[in-house]
Amino acid sequence: MRRPRLSVRTRTALAAALALTPVLAAASVAGVLVQRHDLTDSVTLVAREHAAAIAQQLENDDTGEGHSMAIGEEDLVQVVESGQVTDASDQLAGQAPLVPQGSSATMLRGLADEEPDRYVVVTAPVAGTDSYVVSARSLESVDTATASTTRLLTAGSVLVIVLVLGLTWVLTGRALRPVDGMRRQASQITQANLSARLPVPETGDEIARLAETMNAMLERLEQAVSTQRQFVADASHELRSPIATVRTLHETAHFGEHPEGLTGLSTEVLAEIGRLEALVADLLLLARTEGAPAQVEPVDLAEEVAALTTRPGRVPVSLRAAEPVWVMGDPRALSRTVRNLLDNADRHASQSVHVTVDRDGPWARVVVADDGPGIPPSERDRVFERFVRLDEARARDAGGSGLGLAIVRQVAHRHGGSVTVSSSDEMRTVMTILLPRLIEAE
Image (cartoon, rainbow, N blue to C red):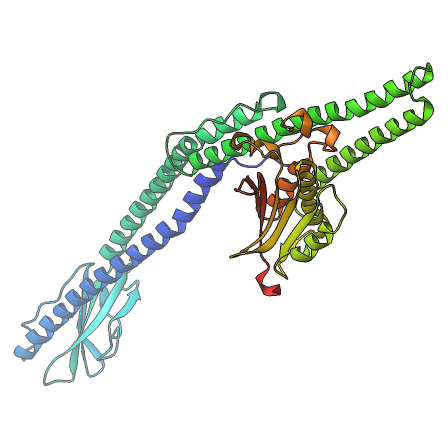
């Protein structure tokens, strides 16, 4: 059983919040560190100036009574002479020198009794003597300021994350609302109502293009199902006709009413069975060629056509071929395609059929022309549909099942080519197949 998963809008909102959290955390930490550094530098500068001022006083007052000591929590001072503390703030009374002479700024904690504050400690020499002044200034203001900034940034970051989480949730929901409408509509589309289409939002974005693509797919599916239904209906009708004929012939013979006896009956039955067999074979070939060619290999069209034109026919066939003309395809399907064109031309030609195989740029071209009655321009696309016969004279009595040209078009399309019908001054019907040439093999 599949575990329930979070919705897309929930995952998107959480992802936005999670992506923003480390960015805000890093920015907050960097801001606090920069602030602490700047404030500490300011306090250190004040301590240096204080120490320098006292050292200046000591330098100008040889009696040692002219200087003043800062007393309080912010500033603590020591005067050190020959390694001994000679004067100090009350909080540092009795303590050894905090740092040796010449020390850089040093951080110390708990200099005053019961005060855990941090102090920055600096020194300043007294010119002309071996004495120096130690000045310690409290960093309490720095710590207080950075603590306030940390709390403010933490609260602000949480507020920003919650705001982004909410906005992402709302905006993602609005963006996905058309998708939910498409989903509900798609769930109601069945084989019975393939004409229904998905709603296309007016946003013009990716979701709108997705809806248009899905509708185009539904259009193709509807056409495919409609074509399949028509094909089944036509195939049923065509198969029913020879079966009914065979049944009628047997019933007539059974009651002794056939005019030619059993011999005539067998001839007619065999003819109908042959017609039925050809129809089933064509239907099977159409079903097989619905997908990609089953067997693909280099094929010399000139050689294939030359072999097929040597078969005996009702009218003579002339061939003009440029050898070789290579294509990549299914040899059996291509052979059947050319044979169907030749059979069609042989059935309808008056005196002759002309076949040409040549190259036309990147295409291999096969042209089959006959001097028969021709095909009206308005019907030239329809002749390639399944079970289409233009008149009764071109129907089953001439041996056609109504599937030959449909097979030709389907095989040509599956091989990346095309088939067209035209006419010329000499020939009433000119059928042309174009297939991609295999130039590397020539």
